[in-house]
Amino acid sequence: MRHLLLTAWADITESLRSRWFAVYTLVFGGLVVGLFVTGLTESRIMGFTGLSRVLVTYLEITMAILPLFVLITTVRSVAGDREAGIFEYMLSLPVSLAVWFWGKFIGRFLVVFLPVLGAMALAVAWGAARGAGIPWGQVAWYVGFLCALALCFLGLGMLISTLARSSDVAIGTAFLVWLTLLLFMDLILLGVLIRGGLDPEGVIAIALANPLQVFRTAAMMLFDPQLVLLGPSAYVILDNFGHLGYLLWALGYPVALGLGGAWLGYLLFRRGDLP
Image 1 (cartoon, rainbow, N blue to C red):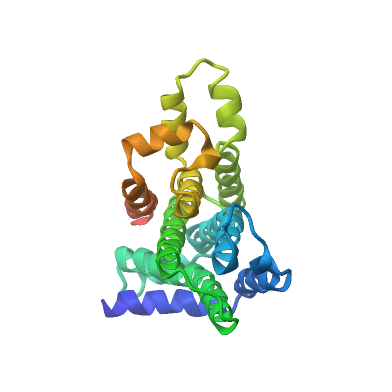
Image 2 (cartoon, rainbow, N blue to C red; image 1 turned 90 degrees about the horizontal axis):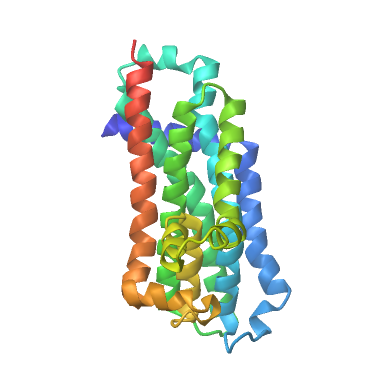
């Protein structure tokens, strides 16, 4: 356990010294400040105002930014260390491959999640200072969704990083994965699959296998329990999951996907890099 924590701390300190972390923190912190400065709390959409409006907009933007940041920075982890020859140095130390891999996983999760959580805490503090009502239930669900999203793409990033043999290939693959998931949220999924004659239940099932779509739908459900914005597909989701059931699915499925990807990456890493 001590070696695991030390490995995680080493990854954290290395990330804190890098430029990408400063940019990453400024993006999310600046995003919240920008939402308040532009007066978004004063707007009204479907009766949805105040801090809740800011949080929903923040989550919608984070859904596009966070996965890309997590994937790009994570895939360079194992692949970059392989290119730099760190593995040979690591194997000379009394640190097992499992401790190194999972320590890096824990450290990287803290690095990518805490700035996002800090930006949301800033939004809540700012709203409280201005006398806005704090929807604590929604805040708790949003924190859980962001945590699940970060874990999901962190695990996928570790898997890609293990499979790729160079940083360039890892980064290209990560960008392709992110772009494919983003497009399959609506554009390709609805345009191609329905045109191909697939039944609506099959289209929705494929959509719900996309962690980005799961995250987006769950964020919508918190302020639109009947999912009016989704149209007829809402009936399929609510009939099969229910309101609480889908929110729990949105928490559990991305976490399981991310941890499963990380575990598969570890198995491949252990098999491929042991002498």
